[in-house]
Amino acid sequence: MRKAFEQEIQHLKDEILLLGRMVEDAILGSVDALKKRDIAASQAIFDNDDNINEKRYAIEEQVMVAIATQQPMAHDLRLLASLLEVAGELERMGDYAKGIAKISVLMGDQPLLKPLIDIPCMAQKDVDLLHRALTAFMEEDAETARLIPEEDDEVDGLYDQVYRELMMFIIQDARVIERTNWLLWVAHNLERVADRVTNICERTIFIATGRIKDIDSSHDTNNPSG
Amino acid sequence: MKNELNNIPILESCNLNIYYDDFKAVSDVNLCIEKNKITAIIGPSGCGKSTLLRSFNRMNELVPSSHADGQVFFSGKDLYASDVDPVAVRHRIGMVFQKPNPFPKSIYENIAWGARVHGYQGSLDELVERSLRQAALWDEAKDILQQSGLAISGGQQQRLCIARALAVEPEVILMDEPASSLDPISTLKIEELMHDLKKDYTIVIVTHNMQQAARVSDYTAMMMINDQRAGILVEYDETDKIFTNPQDQRTEDYVTGRFG
Image (cartoon, rainbow over all chains, first blue to last red; front, side):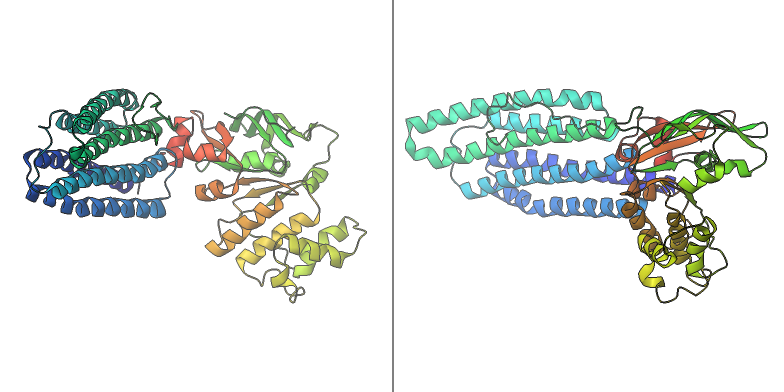
């Protein structure tokens, strides 16, 4: 029984990795389509969010079955509870990508306010952080999980830069408010992705140690919601 | 590891060793049982759980080859002191066994008989009703009190045995796998009963069913055998901690089913 249960746990972790891959693709793809003004690609990413949601619910259901049938304890219990949490975090990251795709579709054939430079950097950094956070999660590597959130500052720094730059556009010409606002939303979504990477890292620490360490993000001035 | 309790423990073993002839079955156990709490003892088969449990009311003495050293204190008094009457001990520290063992007498007599033998002065009818109510059996048994205690279901028989143990008004009830021969509904009734009883009694339960230990107990003691095959106490803590974040790898392996 133990062997079958371990295989099931491994399968669930693999499913999380697959979901993570879908989300990584959605984040990079949504920004890339925005940058290239490829509406069809944006629409495809928007539609594909349903698959991400379905995958999340499928994982959730499998975890519930495992809890009901195996009555997990100790490390197993912490892991399964965390799988639920992480699946939810990934699904929400997928929603951010969907939001970016939606903005691109809303923009239609309007040109970008400016060439995108920092925003693609934010997306790249997000995906890099997410990928490493999921690797640490798979390996239950609390050491690495503690270090990754420190890099959230880089994403916050890029967000600050984008924010200041966009404010300058508004000050110069009030007619660009709508287009500015769209890009601000995109940057905001990407900033939130990194925050959720931190949540995944907290779960990894929890699985490994049994302690929920609330990783300090008090220096994060961009996020009034905390 | 839970070392110090807030209250004075009702039962406490100090450097307790229990032997069967030359074989040491339980080695150097130091354990405090808190009053009005449910303490579960878990661990693999043959790790000395039941032997330890039986030492708390001197039941091991009924096995001729068994002897012990170290001490067991009950409300601060040495249970094994030479002037202590083991029958009086078992009066104050009752026991319920794995297999329901009602006397081959009526339901009424199962409860009244012991009290009568001990010269109980009060109303036996009241004692029977009170005990059956406490054991959550009154509603089912009140119209069949003269029926044999063996003619009811296994779950009812086990509650009858609990009622019988309660009738002598003990302070502690030791339970050795009390629900292992019962179906899930009867098991649930016994567990609910334990929960109700801890207001007035202290319960120590040995169980192989870890979900049961997790459900019913406040504290959990994890035992296993050492290299000499003697039972040792591995970890003792609040039940929540034992089942979500045990500190000892052997406990982790046992509660997650990796053991052995």
